[in-house]
Amino acid sequence: MSQGARDRHPRRHQPAAQPEAGLHQAGSDIDDLDDEWGDEAGPPAQRDSLTDVPGGVRLQKVLAAAGIGSRRHCEELIGAGRVEVDGEVVRRYGARVDPQSQVIRVDGRRIPAREDLVYLALNKPAGVLTTMSDSRGRPTMADLLGDITERLFHVGRLDYDTEGLMLLMNDGELAHRLAHPRFGVPKTYLAEVSGPVPRDLGRELISGITLEDGVASADKFRVVERLGNRALVEVTLHEGRKHVVKRMLAAAGHPVNRLVRTHVGPISLGSLRPGSTRRLSVKEVGDLYAAVGM
Ligand code: URA
Image 1 (cartoon, rainbow, N blue to C red):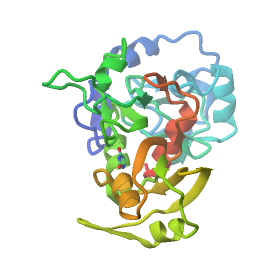
Image 2: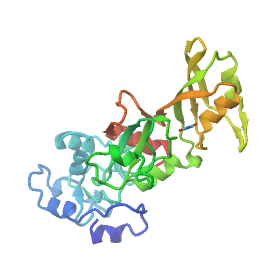
Image 3: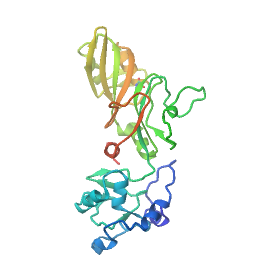
Image 4: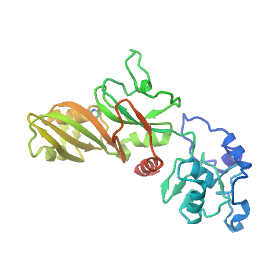
């Protein structure tokens, strides 16, 4: 972030423990001669501190770098009034913004404007700890990240033997909100339980099960498949307590044999293979921001 930009946004929050983005981004862009639209393209009345950030990056370049589309497409979005910077629609092609600190939205959805931010989905296999290191040498998520070298926060935890979706990112504020109970982000699990399951199991889980540390309730429940003396059930809840799904189902008389997390908020595990990671799309990151009011 340039000093000029920093001065103009003195109160803007900078999440802790994130790599400083280099000035090179903004500096190299000043000589951006391949841009078809000059700084003179917009009416002077629209010029203000929001979109004339000294050393800033052209708005269409920020959008294109975030994966919104080609620069031409991004220029069209700007011209159509679909792009907001810090809550204000910007139609000027010459706008220069600070992607490190300004909130940029397309059609109301926030985009990950900072190029240094990484957002990943991981399909954690059983037998892997949801930490980045282990003093006892057990496998951790760090072993699955290959050449990803950024320092990542993981959103919540899964048990050693639980499988499925973990979100990892170096966007500290988003990771914090996604994990915080105040934001109530729902998580969905597929559980193989001992059965057969009675018809009213869902009602029981939704109305609340008394556990040793208080009542826990599901938001949604359905039986996916009945398999004789076993069943596959899907439970959605916005609880983050330790072993909560296993404890709820065991207390209801259906111990869990296998547990897989399939969704965290708007993000789905989909067909991601166990042990693999994928980068979240711009839309998915925007949906995560929306889920926690960012
Ligand atoms: N509930 C559990 O019981 N285990 C997990 O890993 C996650 C939720």
